Amino acid sequence: MSFSSGVRTQHVFGWVSIIWFMSAVCIIVSESVELQTISQIAAQCGNNVTLKCDAVSSHQLDIRSFEWLARDKSVCQNGHGQPDRKVLCERGDHSLTLTLLNVMPDDQGTYLCKLRSTSGSGSKNTVVTVQDCLGSVGSSINESYAECWFTEVYPDSTVHWFQGDVNLTDLAVTQEAVDNQQYNYVSSKIVVQKGNLSQPYECSLWIPSTGKYLSNQQLHMVQKLVVNSSENMVKLQWICMIVGIMMVKFMA
Ligand SMILES: *[C@@H]1O[C@H](CO)[C@@H](O)[C@H](O)[C@H]1NC(C)=O
Ligand SMILES: *[C@@H]1O[C@H](CO)[C@@H](O)[C@H](O)[C@H]1NC(C)=O
Ligand SMILES: *[C@@H]1O[C@H](CO)[C@@H](O)[C@H](O)[C@H]1NC(C)=O
Ligand SMILES: *[C@@H]1O[C@H](CO)[C@@H](O)[C@H](O)[C@H]1NC(C)=O
Ligand SMILES: *[C@@H]1O[C@H](CO)[C@@H](O)[C@H](O)[C@H]1NC(C)=O
Image (cartoon, rainbow, N blue to C red; front, side):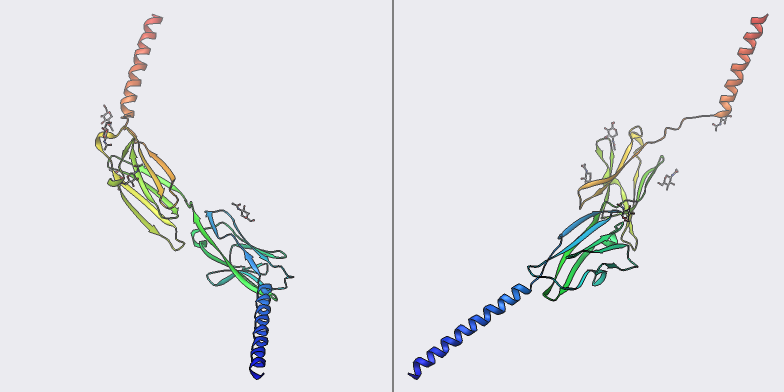
């Protein structure tokens, strides 16, 4: 008797634990709030980029705090952007939208959307990369060197040199400097081949990570035209004299 009642108590205890466990699971499941973001955005330099975060829940959501963070700092909280950042921050019923204005390499990184509500909390990432940054370009050529430069370049680049179909890249010397906003300043120089001055040199800015050229410049050697103005003046005087003589003869 005592043995079977002991088994029954164990059984009852077992069922009670199962019911407890299941109700606990149900509470955890019903508490969960799902956040939806775009996991990766490749932004064009200078554009505005919109990061949206949607809260999805099967229950009524009583949101306590809703924010976007960058490098552990809040940049957009409950619809208010940080005044020192060039961002827009917009709060919807169940969404929070962060707009990064005029993106620069500096804006690149992981953005975290974070939500706290009475029925749970959650967070989700968006990774922003910035590409196709180019400020100004320039070039020069003389009898000794051809040179090209590019400012505010991002991401990392190399300069390719061509003359017609001939790849001269390995003969060029390229220098790079980075400023504190992560922009690159690139200049590349090549010794001008004496024999091939008639064909233009071409320098191109190649971005390995995106696999495309961001800029292309053609350098034409200006053939030195010997314009000797004093010689021309002499010629002009001669022409005038001849015309004058002819006219005099004509009238005579
Ligand atoms: C970015 O947004 C600002 C402010 O809304 C606007 O003035 C600007 O023209 C936008 N820039 C681009 C590239 O769309
Ligand atoms: C040719 O240009 C280079 C810069 O690209 C400059 O350093 C050099 O002095 C120039 N040479 C002549 C002869 O002008
Ligand atoms: C030109 O040469 C450079 C360096 O050797 C190389 O990286 C590049 O791919 C070449 N470009 C072409 C179009 O062959
Ligand atoms: C110069 O031009 C000649 C003929 O156009 C060509 O065969 C040669 O490869 C060129 N050399 C260079 C270094 O571009
Ligand atoms: C221009 O021509 C005159 C007369 O032929 C000559 O004396 C002078 O040196 C020339 N100047 C230049 C810059 O070639």
